[in-house]
Image (cartoon, rainbow, N blue to C red):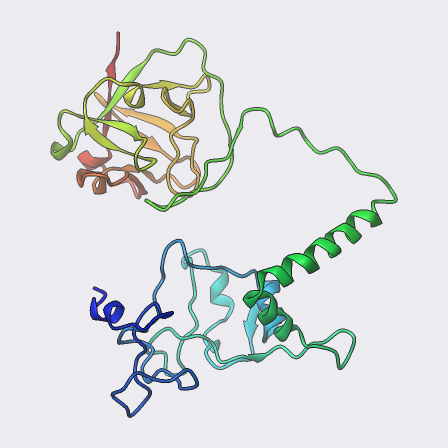
Length: 307
């Protein structure tokens, strides 16, 4: 847990108390390095909502590294980046300290590329834009207008019409955000029902859209619109009557197969065959997730018809 004194002891204009420099017990000065970036008040953390992500091309404008067959290399900390990164068995690869003991930012030099030659290098331009949003928008506006004036000499080709029934859920901070668009199926005359789960901790509770947290969780039965569902005409989507939109889990999965087994059924993602798993949802305010199918009661659902 974050120590309260880290905030209480911070001076005006600081978010927390600075850690000491190496070999000191006093808060470090602005020109001193943190003696231990992995402990103390200042340490590496992933703060949801404040994290920022740069594209590969953007990082290449700031840091000087090499790329061969899609694999980055050329800096201390990237030694273990190799062809194994292309394996489906691993979802992420982190840069590490040279001894491999822990994650660490790679020690790449700043990008000195300049166009024209001997002008301001790209890493300094990146730093200027990062510190001055006004400078960035001023340059972006002029550049964008120039691009639009260039036009398309050969004209434009009409794309497919993907706007019909296109739904793009907004990411949120309460649970895993999706932010992935999907095409919603039509619903015509499907019976209305509620959804229960066989795990004993969710007895007498039903699956619902929670308008306060914007997630799908379980709650005591009220019969209100946020607890009512219909199947789409294709029977691939489960539509919530309050939102008018499909049940969406994790990375934007909205299309499912209902695999009936006896008096219960599994909600299956046909892409990877993972199923909706509600073990986490036994805790109030927690959402169901997609997980490997093991046949447990927390993965089994049943319908409750509504007259």
